[in-house]
Length: 263
Image 1: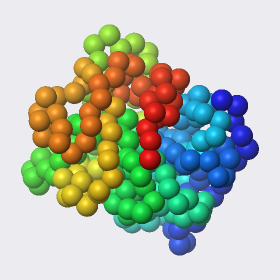
Image 2: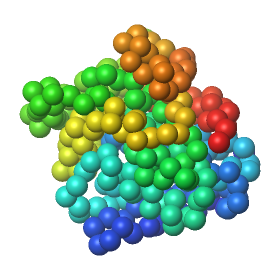
Image 3: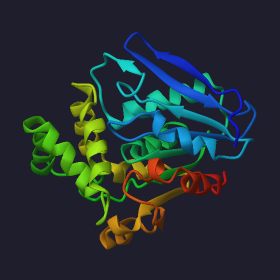
Image 4: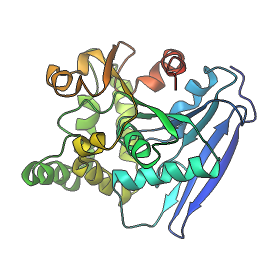
């Protein structure tokens, strides 16, 4: 694909949040919204966008305090991130869209589907939603322990996230690069966003989300328990495209997966 009219745009949510996003492709094309993961930014989808069909309208969003987006707000829930993305769809007058998110972005995509049931036609998770240690609602003891790891030793906690998303054989230099990048997330939003993720009740969110959901999950990272728990709610498709960050590592193949999702 040769990008058509790629532009960086801004939408302001009240006085506390400015969201930056990139719009690519014809304004009247079928819309695909791309949401990055925690500690990352819309640049993760730059190469993916370049491999999508020419007629696709692609909106790649920087979540608050990630990439070029800024916010001084006090609320850092997954629902609030969903409102960031919903504001972009509203600004672009999108009437129908597939919303795809990587990792934490997959949780945000679910919330966008819940917020905009008449607009979002399909939710896609790129190695998200199947991690049972994060996504289902945790009891307060486990929640406090998870958040405490980031507050007590942030670099080590980030390293743990990256290691957990790295199948055997992942290049150590690649893992180090992800650790460095994610570890540089702006604070306090970075830690607060992790808290929002850990406190997110995915089961409740799924009950309020009616769209079909497709999960492209790294084969070596899928737990049978996740398949047993959620197999009747979303379609889990194993992929062999690299680590948890496979959209960065395999952009052409990721674009092929996304292009195959219908409304």
